[in-house]
Image (cartoon, rainbow, N blue to C red; front, side, top):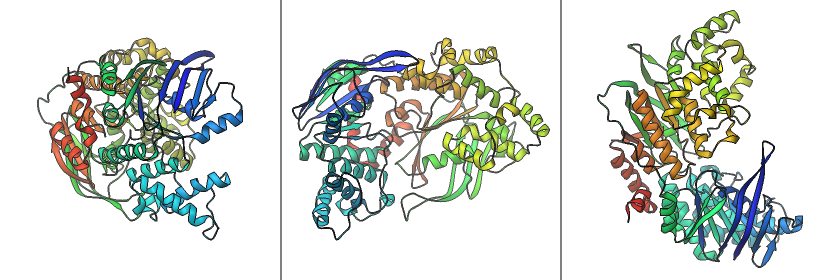
Length: 574
């Protein structure tokens, strides 16, 4: 059993002391799944790290299996707490290469040797360790994959293998931090069923942090609602969820399309890609798709179906082997997949948000918007072309530099190192922007996103989680793009904040006529935000139409019974 009494935690933020957890008290019983929900930034993940022993705390006491841990407990006690607990973090795919069972053998062996070295197969304890490891694979339903290399496992199988590794540590408390957030419905169902099985077979307390109401309704015995570092309510799962969701804003109606004017044509594209999973490929064969002006389109499907790859081809960041991706620009069709003198003009029309979106922690929101305006603001491309001639930078290199801000940071930095180009090249090529220009451009966008204009003067540390997301959307919209592309950037958002973002996207779509293409695993979000959904499976379009019907087909294909009770059905109940 776990008991927490009066736990508090302070952080130093910009030379100020901020209390992020206050007076946290609860119990988690053996054989119980205790859920924790709350808005982004409420302190959920911090609480789990404290319980794991990897984060200090300032007040209170933690009691696990009869032993108490205090803020001033010595290193041996903290080490004991870490040995008694195991944590599964969101987006965690930290696995050893080699056969799946060796990941478990290493963990079992670490209890004996103190490290995760792989024992020799002729060591006196090897058979015993192997048999124990196989038992953990059986718990998560992977015994038939014991000798498969980890790179050949599906996303759901990897998640289950990671869970088996945590169980092999023989924890007295299992902590799960958003264990299925960024996965498709099928993978979610696999992992949730394994968690329920672990509860039944191991009889230890399990704490699950998640913002997904449907997840808690499926697996949580009790629920804690955390807000601003305080426990607001604790009790029966559905009652607490209703309290949590009571302040959710009503849905803004989506603006119907008046006409279907095609602005992007994906024509007969072919692309063969080797997947990380050995022996499998993602093979696009003759895929065609039209996107219409002012339309919100969601691309959905299982993990690994090809959604993100297709989006990157539409963005012009991956080239198909054959076929065309044409944009209607100034009355003519331009192919974004190959270099041409006008491709930068297409990229100026596009803004992209990736899964790993983030704002720079050291710059104000206004400074970051100013940089975006330098690259894609009015007259910026024409200015850059003149400067490129002066600096003897070719049009082809300028084209690459113009695309880099749309890439994820790691990929962008890699390309710049390969090209041996310093980051200050942007200061030399693109025009300066005044703060007054920033304010003028930001005002209407901030109004649409319900953001106060004084956020321009603040850094990301000084704004809330919900404001952080909307500020990033404002950054993406700063240059008034005609096309906004979103690759699952909102998967980590709680439902209250997500509703605000969903409404904001619909207002942006209405006020600016922005065409929006979204990749998402979140079915409620897709149903609510889209004019149209496209179901991708094995790099093929298998359905294209009404968002509710297409989403329900994916749910049925995934055998996702956890979605039988949705957030909307809970809110509708009296």
